[in-house]
Image (cartoon, rainbow, N blue to C red; front, side, top):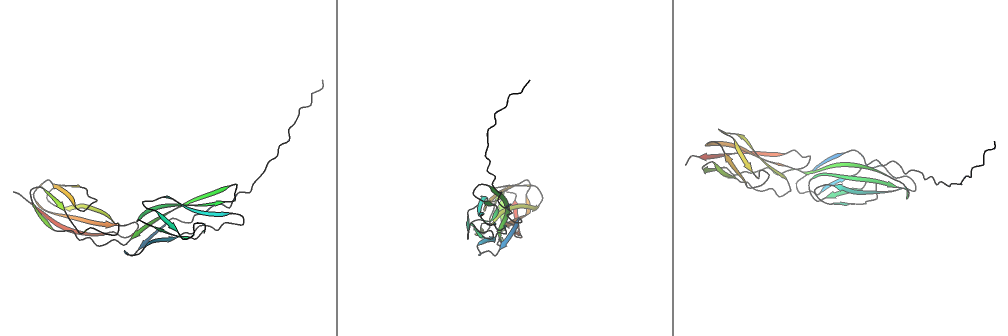
Length: 193
């Protein structure tokens, strides 16, 4: 027999060219002097003809301001030290390509000045001049005749309880992003009442 003719429908397809492939550049770390703003310059790829670019902050402990959000090599300034992720997006009005870059911002931390002290009993307070540049604070036990439990070890002041009377050495460290941390030891004595 004869096969019936199958109807066919015409279809129209629009094929759009992909935008350039976004490249946000290499991950980076920056360390600036204590009083300087936290800045960096992006190293993204330049968009081709008919393609626009845009930087956006994806994550980080503070906020950011771009010198030119649509420029592949824009500068950026952030409000707090820490690790930030930024996204470079290329767009040709119908397709997008995105790539992320991670930048660690830090300021040279101040040199800690912990306060030597003595306490009657097994509990005391670890005190120091507080940093003003947004540094991360870390108290730790260096040595002594027993163990120590530090409460709020990321704050000034912090409280400490030791397991035995005697002289202990504690370390106070300030850190900021990718910068070299600064630390100072202090002796604290716990006297038997």
